[in-house]
Length: 304
Image 1 (cartoon, helix red, strand yellow):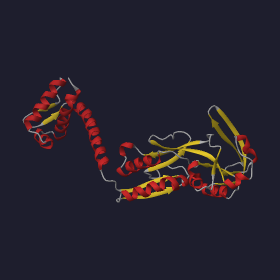
Image 2 (image 1 turned 180 degrees about the vertical axis):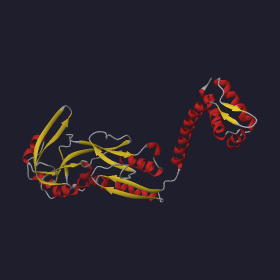
Image 3 (image 1 turned 90 degrees about the vertical axis):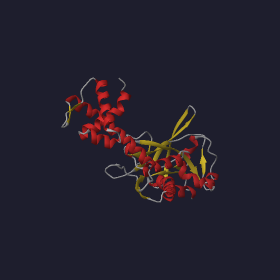
Image 4 (image 1 turned 120 degrees about the vertical axis):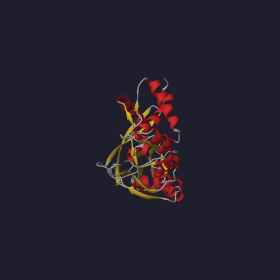
């Protein structure tokens, strides 16, 4: 007996069990009544069990048949879900896309992708919440959240975006006032511009091949906004420890330059969090794909 051979018969049997009518089952399935009867008879032979009790007046489902029907119903439900998934896959995206992202990363990396997505999908509207607070997709009614972590989030449905590397940046005019920085140990005599934390000192990590360094530095300027840190570095206040993507424009404009680029420093990862992938709407699926395509070249971001 082949389980594959039984699949079509399971559909027919389930419809007969639900309608208790060969005629109605045949009508719904687009088959002849005699074809339905032959399929049921052949199925019972293969199974070696009586599934339906048929008289001239009515059809009843046997005890074995009822148990078999429950298995059939579960399988058919999965088949319907698979069909629904494919239909949704091909549907035009519509409705409101609710997105949450960290403030700085969202402004600089997510918003440009959202702008293009809105332009390409006329029937989608966007509700963007830029916040650094933790979010709950279900409680906050969120379609998609972007988060930044050192490690993979403890979330059942997450996809990687881009690596987020950090580095040291300073204005060329600031560096001209001091002797050249050629190694991490040269940094201790400088003033630093850091993201605001509980202490004025921070231990900066450096890695190069098998070498590791942890250099403690002190800040004279701290802020919780990366734009403020970039502006302070451009104003020659000191050396800023920044995500690479935050400093990119200032570097391209010649306002900042990277210090000790041969040394690797902190590395974070950005992630997309969604609800159950099987229930993902076309707008969420398409925007997720667009976001991954746009950001898969790598970059850097502020800490979560």
